[in-house]
Structure formats: structure tokens, C-alpha cells
Length: 122
Image 1 (cartoon, rainbow, N blue to C red):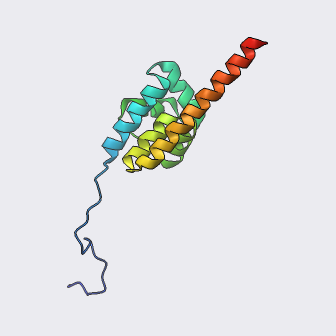
Image 2: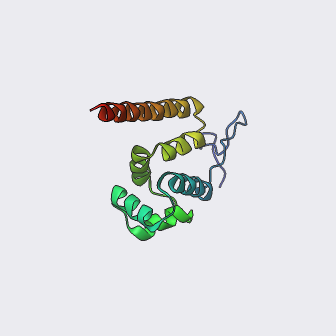
Image 3: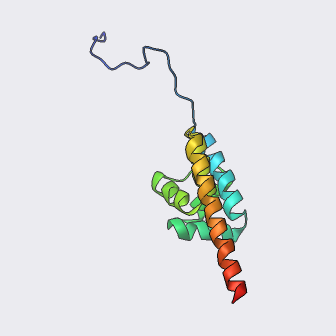
């Protein structure tokens, strides 16, 4: 059986290729981000499991880089962790948004410092 000219093309005509992000590399990047944000302790695994409503064994595999989180759990992690958000944006090759997340993190730190100063004055 031969293919017709209307069949879907497997390769692009202009030769552009997408960068290969394998599930293993994604799992390793997410694992490093989770360890940086939450630490590598058993309590960190429990904290992330509570945040994502996931099984602790699954979360332990995320921390070890054996598996990556599902899409819905990844969104929850990005909601609660700027480091995970930055890691995903770097994988997506979005340096402009990585910079924006960094600025928002600085804003949060500044608000915390101002609140601490106001509390010390009382």
C-alpha cells in the first residue's frame, strides 16, 4: 500500500526540529527543583504529597527523578513553587518569563521585609 500525497507528513519540509525533552530529563529537572524548594527530607515529601493530593510513594519518585508528575500535579507544583515554575519555563525556552518570575519573587521578599519592619516598630 502506498501513501497518497494527502497523507500526514512525519517530518517538516523546512527541516526545523524541536529540541528533545525526554520524560527522563523532565523528571530530573523537576526532581532538582523540588529538592531545591522543599529540601530532601521525608517531611518535604509529605508536604508535597499534601499540596498535590498525591500518594507519598509517587512524590518520593518525583524527588528521586524516577518519574515526573502528571500535568495536573505539575501545575499545582508550579503554583506553589517559583523554583519549579522557573525550571519548567527554562525547559520551554522562555527566558523572558523566567525573569518575570524572578522579579515577582523579589517583590514577595520585599513585602515580607516591609512587614517585618512594621511589626518590629510596634
